[in-house]
Length: 518
Image (cartoon, rainbow, N blue to C red; front, top):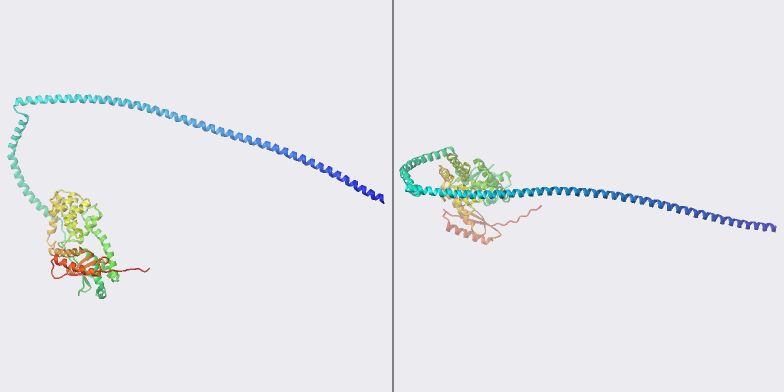
């Protein structure tokens, strides 16, 4: 039993020993195999690294070769371009050398020609001197033979011719002068008669009143307004006197100024159509109509130019022509008068072979100063000449303006024609009314006298000159000062004007504050 145990222990020990030996051998073999495998892996990696190195070196060498080849090609192309440029420069240099040589040859030829011409001029001058000497010798020989000098012979011949012709010339001049006087007198009468026959126009005096038709008599009350405020506003802003009488469905506008009357007429007719009649609306429409009237003035001017066939005129000058429609001369419409003068002057110019368009232009503009003579000091002749110079009109037109009343001497036939045409137009039966002109002039003087007072903005002569309404600047004139202005104007009227009856002076000062809610 004990031996079996010992044997079992011995076997166990032997098994352990053998297992250890086997384990050692196995571990040794495994380590040897791992080392060998690692060496193989390292060797393989070294081979692959060498291969990659060789491949990269080959690629680098190929890239370097390509770059070198491209660089060589570029250098070759550049050298070729430089060579071509050098050849072109050589060719151009050769052309320049040849041109320079040609210019030198030409310059040499010119110098030779100049020397030749100089030599020829000198020869010609010598020949001229020789010819002049020969002429002088021959003249002296002739004077010696004739026993007269050159000047004496010429004076003798002229004296004999003058004696022979003086009587015939005097007789011819006298005969022609008599015929010319008769012919001129006959032709001038025929020309004026023909001119007046060829141009005919109606004669219409300017009136100082305008009648406005009303849709019904109830409208009169609306125009008058509560306590007369509407009619007072209309008269104040327009400067026109409204006459409302028993005439059914009509009111009368009275004013010496046709422009004011026309603006007032259009304003009132617009108010009637609109139906809203109150002071602020009246002032609003008056301002609107005043602006529209400027366009109408331009239309009058353009129509006048179209009627006469005149073109190329400054628009400001056309506006001044249109304003003549609202001016009068002794009751005659200034624009109609200017058109008549233009037509008459054009007909006379056509008969006498002068410039027809220039004659019409001078006739149309001869009274242009009347368009603004109430705004600028001076006669309408001086103002008109200044306007013509400002817009660079022809000197003939300027002289026609200055000479049509004899202020200056006429320097052309057209200026004389304009003066004659002006007299013809003014002297036609019924064309002018002296009393109306004096009346208008008196009202204009009345308004102008009040305008000279400091602080006065607008003046309106109404009630046929029996009342003067003065609108002052409220920011400059106080209520107390307005009384002083009224007394000053009254004193100036009494000292400077002659007038029948009495003149009422009304000074109006008004300040308004207006805001608009939105």
